[in-house]
Image (cartoon, rainbow over all chains, first blue to last red; front, side, top):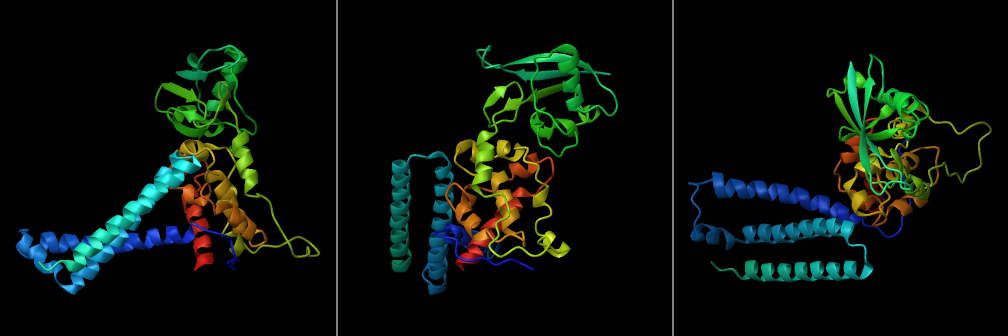
Length: 119
Length: 233
């Protein structure tokens, strides 16, 4: 008989769970990345080849998701490590703001770049 | 056959700083490190201080660092230590009270925080609250913890963040949350669901390496996290 539970208050559970989900996506996309970049075709990398891929809607969606998941995964991990060492509430809030703002800025810049890329 | 024991010594009332003192002990088949320490204390130097009790690896008193790794002194056979030179130090990560004795107050305070006892709300049955062997399977390994403190002393997150509950308290929380006789999982999960609770563990797995009972502590912390995620989904 497995036990079930009721509410447990405000939680880091979903943030952690999403960190795990993004890890799966990143692992799959990295495999695709290595296959496409290094093993499929003649193996030479040129701007034209990369640009040709990035104009297709499928690659745009894949890369935008890559950007979002990569940033979330990395920043969540970094925040978790920093939390070990930053015990002052003010500095914790300050660093959190820097990471959140930096993440938001990179997401915005990356999304604009990928969406508007015409080759 | 003789072995040299280099033992950490520190008496805060007398010594300015810690130092190592060397002793020679004649070892024999079946002699444990605790026997060797007893020999030193009884025959060579009565000031050597360390904790000991059961001599059976169940009380958790004699955990210490032996040649760089954490073991129970009573479970460590002198003949099994390959080197003739044995360096003995107190558990790292704790304040030293004297020689090999460390201050475990913080460890037990954190343990108390997760309510390490059965909480029930339903009226008690006529006899005891029974548990099937299948249900015991969920807590069997976690119940083996002897509270020696080796896991906490090996945990980098616990070194960095003194407020972190630590692997032993989280393991105990899991043990009771998964126990089908217990009805206090909600309040216990609310306690570990904190920035200083279950989310501080980074799966370094040093705790598993240090555990003298070979408990897969990190796995149980992961199960505790799964309970919280399932609660949210």
